[in-house]
Image (cartoon, rainbow, N blue to C red):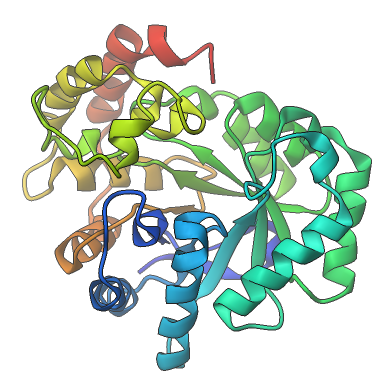
Length: 327
């Protein structure tokens, strides 16, 4: 699989990574053996990048990755985790002592002395502008608790603020055919600064797979049930913030754009991979088949300009009024 340098980390990662929010249980329960099978399928398909967070399953996702990699010493995987969501979301909690405490827990969960990459996990917007926060992150690097730091953001404005900081290695942002705003300013700014871009929610919580209808019912422990209107965390993390019925209708149109031999989900991943400035896209997977199919998207030929134009037209007509200005 194609490898790209992840911004200021200086390390190469696969263009399709493995998101592991699902392994924590927020998309329904996943057995440990099934989680290991998914990670095996990803690694065996060329994936060299795992993305997790300390709050996914209250640390379960990190723990599973740590145990998996201990049993797969041949797997050359960069693991990016996140911190910050275990505390009340006020700027005052983003201080060095808390960072050390959160890092110690993640290092124990993952079974490592130094974390490859730690991302601030969508903190309050003012955190991205705080000199003290970046001084604290630099201290973690100096103490060898972390090798590099980055940010995960909700808005393009937050991304641009972080990109201007010289120590920020990468920015994780929602990017998919239903969320085009980052293409306008964020990706060009990242390229100019040498900052990596990690694209999350690439399938709009599964909408872009084309498998769901307006009558699909998700389990009560699935965020696609309990966070549709932002009840638990930012609404943009669920269906990219789009009204479900609107998203289902637009997804049916998107599915018709898939080239022969590719699924709608693979088409969405291919669309993201070829956006200038994207380092890696991190779809989740709950089965071996999904993990393999996601990785296979990297081998698809680039989408033609006619398809790119059709995606833009669909977005402008159906999606833009709902999400563009907010995020």
